[in-house]
Amino acid sequence: MANNYYEGTGVLVLDRVTPVIKALFGAFALDASYPGNGQAYIAQIAETNDPQWDDVLEGLADLAATLGLDLPDQQGDSPLSGVLEVLAEHFGADQDEELENLIEHHQFEDGAELEALLLIATCFDDGHHLSAIQFEGCWYCSKPRLFEFGGNGVSAHPAASLLRSAP
Image (cartoon, rainbow, N blue to C red; front, side, top):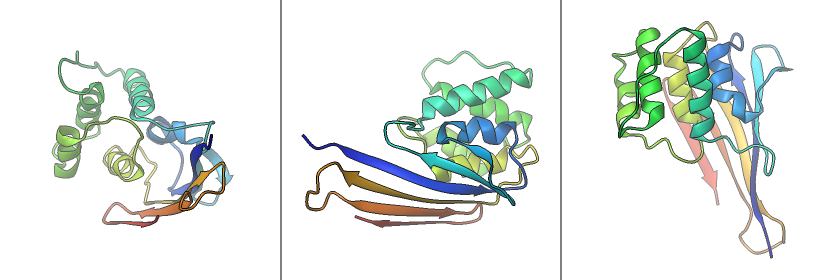
């Protein structure tokens, strides 16, 4: 039987790693000290870490608790939506239209998307000043089968993002 895998590495371009960055990107094997010079390493490695929205929820709920914020009881909506709303108010981003749209319409299921995390991070800026995410990943198969290999790259900036894929 053949197994399929996805792996990728990249960097966050920022001033420094802060509690918000740790909460959002901690599940991406965040390394604040490498490579340095305004960049922090992130990775998604098969069978090691698979960043999910549940990981982001846990990180942001812990952040909210550290900040002394009360989290609402969730009924119906995604628990992450409620945490995001509380943090948006705390960071003064509760009127940001893009963030409101994300909170209202995103399912927050399965894998956490870097572009959505970038939006959240830029709205919840606690001094990190995240300016971009650069990430390259690949899919591969444990057996050399036809068309079981591919890659993608993300170069996301707060003002505009570019996603390119090669099947």
